[in-house]
Image 1 (tube, each protein chain N blue to C red):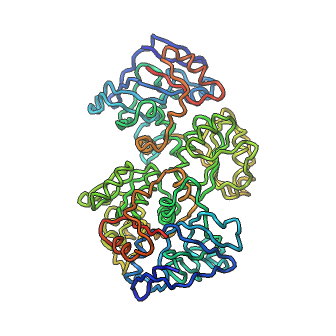
Image 2: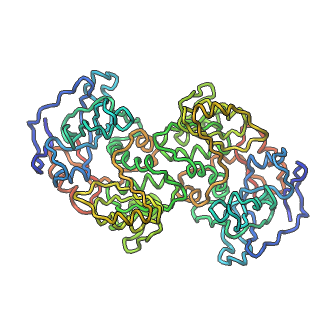
Image 3: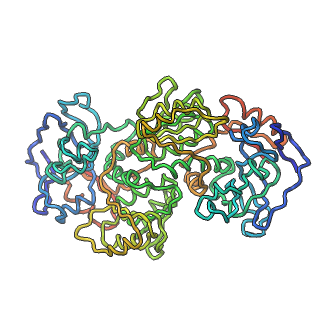
Length: 318
Length: 318
């Protein structure tokens, strides 16, 4: 089958990748639409030594599912961590931290930039009828944005700052805006600003950064510079959510964190059902972020475009 | 001036009520539109021994404000608790619990069902331009709904039940729906159901009440029967938010609360700025609840209507 294959930090379009065989608890899924994410771009840069089919943001159709035949023919999205189900993490409600897990298109499991792929049936969520493919394909990053509200009690009276208005920052801003909190988003480019303003979200330019006054700050930049800005904006006893995978190490003044009694919260994958509920109610609109859609055959061009500055989201149709 | 006057549990329309004189830190406000609330109906039934002008939900125009002249001519809404500013509660961020406070149209301070009334200028919030009077008049009860999210960390993955889909229950349901949580609302009448369905909110009839499974339950019925239903729906270690002023005492099994490790949260007035932000972004639409608007002169008829079963909101225009 066709697929985009990553090996030694090089991506190639191949037509000779074997069609995967689902295990007894797995489904075989045909990709309908897939999204290129910052993590994909970082895997190309060597953030994590992965070889295989790339891609983890998808909406697809179930082709085979021995353990859940009712899912066959269903349009689904899926959680990307396939966990063992038996370890302490799995048994105590932290399956996304299972030490034996594989991660779709990221670690030990071929991804979705292909004609078909497999996932455990328990990872799948049928897409509500009213949610079109172009919105559903954002469920995974939207769930990652929702995770912030799962981890942090964000109060409607909190002053909240999002640093980084790129792909994930835009989704985070849309989700946090629903809380009624006093939300501001730091923007660098005019297009970032326009997309947010369109949703009634207050933006501030980088030169007007608040200092020492925010109750909650989200760093969605993925860059050490973003952490510094986020840290400076925070008030004493504030909460700083790290919503990025930094390539490389982060240097920061840990004693100052103690002195200012700052809470740091690392935040990664999130829950799919609330993300689908927000899409179903049209409370968020991720389709605003779509720049372009390429067929899988032109996957390398799609990646070139996704890596350009100012580009939000590039999709692959299969 | 004209006003609706409550005394000895009797409401009367009067034209001889003296125009109030604002104190040095107060504003004189002309009522534009006011709402009749369940608390008003309960004051009539003797829930609290109050005599004076009734009414606390309003949108008005500032006529005089010596301490804040920039507010004159502004369209405002206002927080109803006028606190002393000096006691322990006031100094530690709990002004709505000040022991020396007066409460607009409820305790020690004439209310808004009148041509004019007074409030401290610090209680006032200008209404954003895009928010029309018919929406702004709901700011106070909407803030009371928002207070739930201020007090309780409602997680997007929580199963949440609202018991009571009347005036306040509708606003609470609209606000909690924005959290992405798995929300269900118990409805009694078809109109309650329709208003919620219109906003994409899942309703359940009283006969299908969940038992022992909800993470968070809100009792917005104002009736002891509502508490019982809410309590039964809750899972062990669940959180029960009491969003009602019960006329009379509530009997419940306190040992069962201990055994099931239930958290009870009493919840009253809430923050205005987030409520205004939700209105400005059209994330909630309270105007759906308006049944009728009467001139102040027909205030007694308005109260008659507001007291009828199945009626959501009756407004008074001045």
